[in-house]
Length: 114
Length: 112
Image: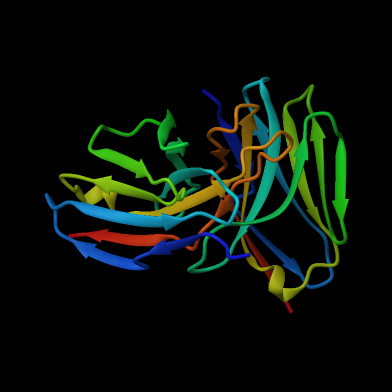
């Protein structure tokens, strides 16, 4: 059983550019959540995808968007990058079963916006 | 929305001592409380969790307690070891398989 994987591991972009981050969920998990973790802080919920539909969103602007594919992998897209978007972006997957609320995190993608 | 507060922000203990990290939450609908350990350069790793129908859960050197009335829960690590050094996060979630609200983290340093 493979865990949650994310790519790339690191990324440097300039302000105004667009970025796409990728996540493969753990085997058997149909739900993917994305979090932003600024340096020295706890993860902040961006949004969640379940069965290819957005299923909840945190306080992030529309330039943060996502996709989930039939194999449950997911993408996070950020348009018009701002300096404050520099952070560790975490993907978490879960099986969405009663009694199985746990979310399992990937290693993250560290994004630096210059 | 939910607000999770975590204390202390840093904790330094001697190897073999116990460590306690405390969290409070604001939303009485929250009913699932996981704890994560995050090592440098890695994603958070689940170490223990508790549901609101249970007051205490233990797994070897790690235990979590929950007081629903006071809306607080705590992580207890006994016989600490240098490899326990990391940042620990508490989180809270309501029963909708949705977002986790995280605390701000506690940096634990276990001195040999």
